[in-house]
Image (cartoon, rainbow, N blue to C red; front, side, top):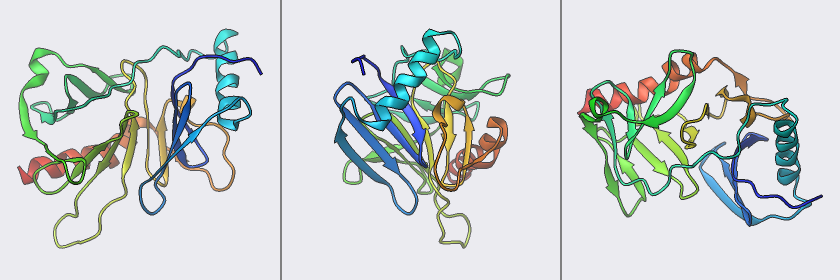
Length: 215
């Protein structure tokens, strides 16, 4: 197997993975959030899968680009007046064709409706009402909605890879939506695939609405 340079996210075996030239981070979210870091080599199955994707790209069978930038060093998270999440100066939007994207926010999209405060001890951003967003240093965004009403149960986390200006995917422990690049063949029980607009309205929009109701 020839060496090659790559960087990006992949969803496989009910986990999100992020890899650079030296390490692979695996994000598991079955019961609690677990992050595992390991060194990679040419025999790593994750590398093999990426090589397959890259070969498909090179032969024109896939429109995937390996030049995506990943949003890191997030220091400001808020919900704007349009009701969308904004990370620094990038807005998470569901565009008209139904794709989830992180795009540069226009001046009109930078008006703040609700802002999160960074909790250094917990290493996460906390909105009014207790809903949180964690941002792993590799660029994984993790939404966790606080309990609503009298319920003490927290809904499961929502995972979104923070690739800029690309068609994204999003997942919970049961559902998957978006760019199928992140969804290879899986062993065991696969996640249920739903449309991105449906996923957004059932998992991301309630997070935003809860924050706005508590602000």
